[in-house]
Amino acid sequence: MIGITKLLCGSENFGDSLRYVHGAKDEKHGVSKDKGPVVAWNCTNTCNLKCKHCYADSRHCSFPEELNTREAKVLIDDLSSFKVPVLLISGGEPLLRKDLFELLEYTQKNGIRSTISTNGTLIDKEAARDLKQYGVSYVGISLDGLGAKNDVFRGVTGSFNKAAAGIRHCLDIGQKVGLRFTINRNNYDQLEDIFYFIKEEHIPRVCFYHLAYSGRGNSMIEEDISYEEKRAAVDLIMKKAVEFGKSVEILTVDNHADAAYLYLQVKKNDPKRAEAILKLLHMNGGNRSGMAFANIDFKGNVHPDQFTQNHTFGNIRERKFSEIWRNPDNSLAIDLRSRKTLLKGRCSQCKWLNICNGNLRVRAEAVTGDFWASDPACYLTDEEIRGDVI
Image (cartoon, rainbow, N blue to C red; front, side, top):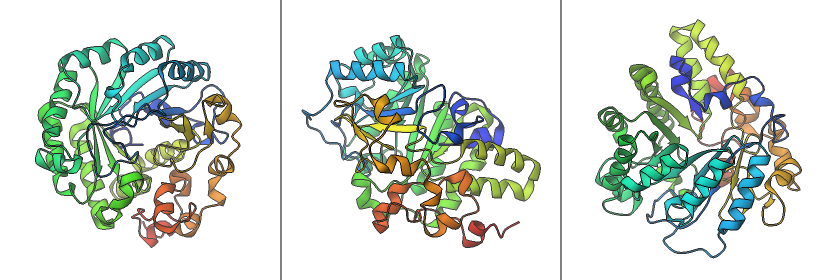
């Protein structure tokens, strides 16, 4: 994640304390001295929607391989002992787990900060109250357009209205909530409208995701936007971040080319501010999948991140997550923690490698078949890659 508001406006939010601190980029062994990685757990693969870009290929059916309540609590115990700072609970649709609130309560008692990634359609007033009661620090609700455009993309009529109601239920009781918006060919023309929606609904946070070519998203490669459109999208996001100031936290996700692009754009008019931004970006170090970020799927398999579920480090039914993460048997885990020497093409030659760290590997593999090839979604020009720009 790249904290656009943090970099441009100097805001302070919880995630910034994990991303922009000394030592963040040095977690080469997958665990820092005092904490484990942020963990995203796909607690279920069952979902009530049919989103075109779903990286988990979730479906509206039951999955018997899903971790049961006892196994989930054993996992939470281990994450607590490992000092995992945040457990991001995702799916599928996590609110379809009958024991979700029991597990949230257990997470709270174990001192782990929890967040929820949801489509929002099942958050009624009671669910919103329960999320707040059991200590959920943030509810991220996915919208990929307004009205019918969202419904077509998500495959179910009425999903926008239900998600919007879920947002309002959270806001009404003071539960922190925000939007997750994946930019693609289907909704690129609604970026301005999304910002209007955020303003009118008084939504305090939004994450703009670049398309990941994973799961059903693999079939959407041709629906990604052009390099020129990516640059225009980031320009708009930066502009709106300045307009909103610290009142709305704005982030971009899954394309660390945004870091270099933001720095270069700011440098044109405010070199002093640009240098401060560059220092923060160097602290962060770019993509930290397999280093400071981990994914556990609904079967208990451990992955570098939620988009790279075709590569597995181990399974928590056979070995504790903390043991898998500290001493992985999978050579890919070791490689990810020293990836700069393995990257190829433009990534290997890039001036900004220390603030990007090779971007999103799953896209490179999806397009070329080579995990270490250049990320095809990097929109920096050859001149910018070489550093031949003022």
